[in-house]
Length: 361
Image (cartoon, rainbow, N blue to C red):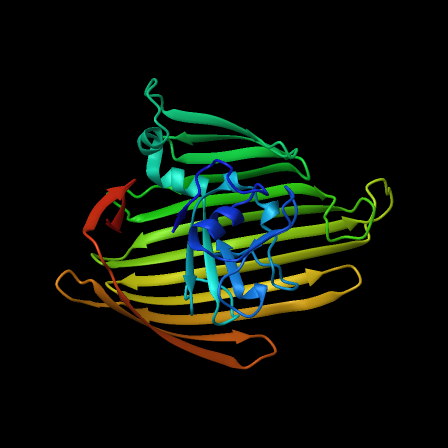
């Protein structure tokens, strides 16, 4: 796991550099702020590194890659990287690397005002709303400004603006729509990720002043229901709309050289009890590039997983995973994996914002 926070450490203003440095993964970065940036894990092609946030696949429906530059680093709080068969990813590319990004707004919402106040060292008035602002600038001409807030009423958000080769606004908002009470054990939260940035002067283009515009809107609604002492049902519904425009010259006033619009609508449902997990995921994807229209593609996935632990402190674990994926136009794709692990160190347990966690020193 990589802690990202809301500060900028990567050269391109994205989280790719931090993740690559922390985990010793290959980084594709041209070195210019705002230029295409991506991180790769084990796998033959770059599109085998599946990236997701809030359960939403962020990889492009055309080509499978992801330019991290369009998602500024201040949107994220941490990232979890795993290799092999990942049952938490809505992507049927099989074995490879999966990176799960956690939005800063989601982490702050679950942690609450007191926890965030302690993390940033805030010693002022104990206000019900905590706000902070950050600014970052580079001698290479890149700059970012961002502000964030956390409210005790159940809302958190971060928004900012980038300057330089990548310029434009981005924001992430999370809010608790339904809180669990004594007479009900269900929680409903809503999240929004949005970005609208222009990228100028990409070094791989032969045009004199190439400019691309990226717009993306991702709303997500999640629910968590406690079904018993040890059983939980986690469900989510998401929409992801993205458009990519490219002009060969910034002064062009006509239509862009090409336009790609992608949309996906999906749902994820997980039943967890004890060390068992059963998942059912469905997704529909539509792509229109103006000259090329790809029909609606459907995907359905069922997952069965279990964690077996043993040892003096249950430090050994065996994780069998079996899943089947059906994609429209293709037959059923069965997959399975078996992972063996051992934990070293002292086991620590606690809770933050009502969420229980286990850590190893």
